Image 1 (cartoon, rainbow, N blue to C red):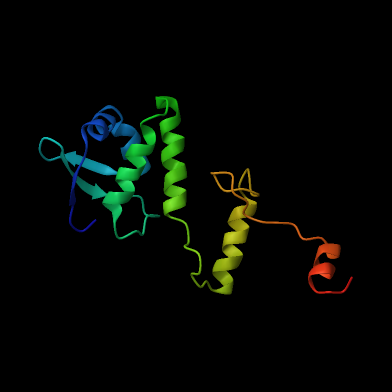
Image 2: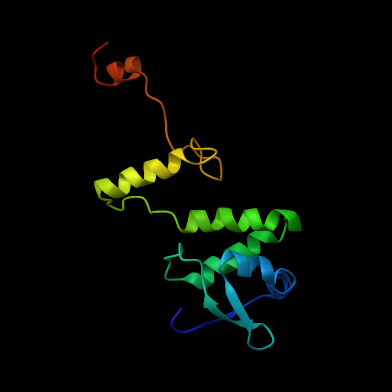
Amino acid sequence: MLEPVAIEVTTQQQELLQSQREVFYESGFHLEQFGERTYLLRSVPAMLRKPDITRVLAEILDSLGGLQESEWQESIAVSLACHGAIPAGQSLSLQEMEELVHQLEQTQSPRTCPHGRPTMIHLSASQLEREFGRR
């Protein structure tokens, strides 16, 4: 980031940041304490293009509250994937679409997103015929 962003955290969020600073650092968040419950956010993962990065970080911190420490790194990765996803309705070039499909094919679970929602559906020939009034 060109300039650090000051963020205020709750007591619970601060405890998470202090105990798991390395997990956040490895995920791309570089935070520096700058007061009692204020941190300077110096860098964020490149995939995050959101203008309100402080809200995204707060959501990630809040989502970790009920999880075991062993689940934190995966939870952060899932949150980053969702927040870094291409928003619905955004236009893509043919090359970008082909690259997304190629990347999807390389994943371990290409049929669902990290939250279990489908990324694709199968339409049989008979379903298509019904939809177009051919049957």
